[in-house]
Length: 130
Image 1 (cartoon, rainbow, N blue to C red):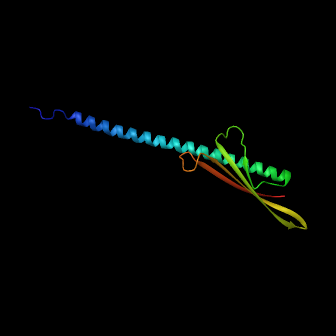
Image 2 (image 1 turned 135 degrees about the vertical axis):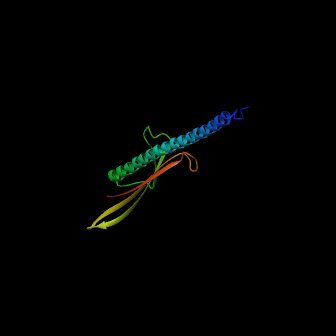
Image 3 (image 1 turned 60 degrees about the vertical axis):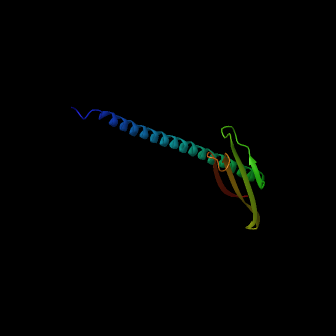
């Protein structure tokens, strides 16, 4: 009489369970990586939107010598969903007998709402003198 009968079935079931676990783990890692890459791309887009806001503010200051305390900047196509808030303040001082003004600009670009999984925000600060 042969008592080793049926040994292959438990080994096959064990192997299938291990392979299914590995597949589930790989799917989870892949999804996490994909979400990280998407958020990284949104972060770069937010940085560029903030940079566009700073450049807009610097242009306004250098052109007219005034800046609004807080301005919402309209962005071109390609930045859908992003909002940019530009804040500016000026401090007057005397240099070599002439009046000068130092402007501090801060542009904050954001996408999504705070607390959501797709929320991204970047801020750039710059100063200029006129």
